[in-house]
Amino acid sequence: MPGELKELSRQIRLLTKRCKRQEAAERDRGSRVGQVRQRCAPDSLVCLLVYILSNYVVELAADFVLGKGWKNDRVHCTGCDDVIAAVEWGYIRTPLDVLLDLELEPLKLLSAAAVLAAAKYVLEHRLAAWVETQNRDHGVAPSRHLLVHHALTCVPNMVPREVRSRLLGQISGPARKQRKFLASFRRRWGARYGRLRAEDVVGVEERRRKATVFFQWMNEAWKQSPKAPLLVNMDETSMVRHPAGHWGTVMKSAQMKGRCAVDRATLGERRSCITLMASICPESALQEILPQVLLGNEHQLSVRTLRTLRPSLPNNLHIWREKSAWTNTGLIKRYLSLLARSLGNVVEKRTVLVLMDMNPSHLDYSLIAHARRLSLRLVLVPAKMTKWLQPADVALFNKLKKSFRAKWCEVKSTSPQGTVSQEQWLHLICSAVQEVLLGFCWRAVFASTGLLGSQEAISESLCQELGLDTPPQVPERSPTRSEAVVLFPARTKVEVLAWIHFCPKSKVPLCCPPPVSYYRGQAVRRLE
Image (tube, rainbow, N blue to C red; front, side, top):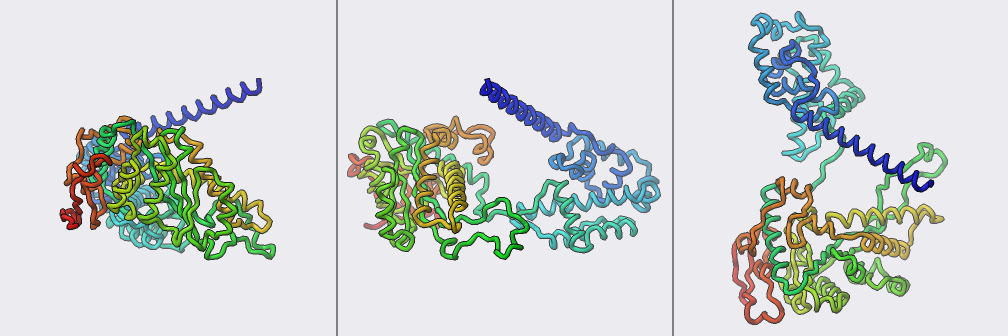
């Protein structure tokens, strides 16, 4: 009986949340089509004053009518055609003497508070548009100094002197007053105090072109497979020695008891890390035998530590001690051999497709020949597209590192000195790898990225990133040489057709073409 009541309460909570989400979605849809309560009439004196102060920008006046920037739930409201037309007709039908008074002496018709509100709205609307341009086009998150400096240039020219002085007093006062003004501005205009991520931006057209060619390549790889395909995604990620920047509860009085409340870690610990070569596939039964490799250098992994750890490691976990924790072509060959050995008879019964990104260590031509000898086929995710098309980047690493950080904090909190030893650190990584990689079914992730031979099940978010409303229409043929060049990094010598057209081990002498390198899009025949 208590269990049934608990389940019933859970269902009620879920239904309540669903109803709230539906109500919020309906409000959002209504605001986007202009079905919201208007702040004022389009032909009101305040609206006409906003129209005049904005130098007759009718879209700005329409946003004022709809309440954009008025309340924080209306930041997405934009002037629709009906409101724009109503503002224009309101201006046309207003007597000329009223328009002259609004332009020259607005305090005759409106109170000082109303004129101040109109001038402040024009200023904030211009400031919000400038911030959006700075974010989108220049990649700059303006500081308080830049915002205040630009806000002073956004003050309307035709504002009465006394209103102008009051408006400038709200902006250019002491630092505390400036922060108060900007906090209110951010809250009402849908902004936040933060920073922009630094990343290589890929345009929507380029994304769509790369994704389409990649899907052609992947679909043809599935069609050309003589046996049932098995897709394995391998990707590298860094596992830090000392995760920093944890958010939690900090007592304000902790600094008053003689000890400094800090997360103690040496510079070497904060900078130290090892590489995890993680492998996932859409079949849970085979996920258990896929190799997971930890790659560390000689300073991080001592011989004594390895001797202590190896007896307790699961069969699918391997630790490699090398001179460097960075992968290279030789280590990728070693991984492919380990993968073929771990799969065993599966290689004979299935066509194994190994999906990797275009790391420079993955692009060497010798990898194709080595994979062919192992009866594996390599497929590469397009450059700059891994966060959308590679399952490990889409869903795996975020869960893995979240689990590792939670385990690390738990061990650190119970340690007498608040330290985590090297052996404990490696055990935590292995525990997180086993928990996350074996605890989830990854088929939905592979399907949502369009990697299972068709693109019917790709996610809505991926369609949005590609600028599409529906799954892409992919040509049913192998990509040509000129099409496939866009997949590979620029200014890199790549043997394109050797990657696209796979030659099985039995047909290498008959159909394997001479390698062709591409540099800056130009074909160069290799002389061997």
